[in-house]
Image (spheres, helix red, strand yellow):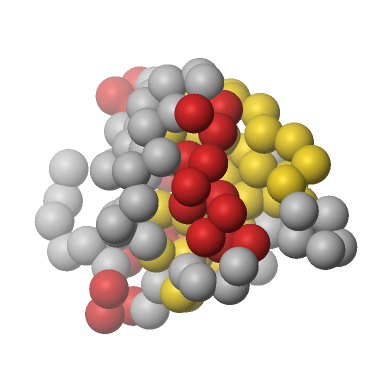
Length: 123
């Protein structure tokens, strides 16, 4: 299982998480084995939001082949797009570091984002 986590830097599990999905500088792709142990964490640079827009970011992430996205916040349009494409969106707002939230996810302590949790603000 592979999960994308919006990240401020390219430091893998040591990165600070980004509060924004669309404008995040990086995504850390965390891969788990069947026992939900972390087997790898790879930082990938996000596409330029100003150039590609939110739709471009969504397409980029869909192209990474992840099973889910673990984010602090996301608007309704990307939430719907990911859900329609079989990518589960998880929400977690308390944990500042990628590694810590990746472990929290492995323990099953992260909830799926419901439509009423989606951000209503527009960028």
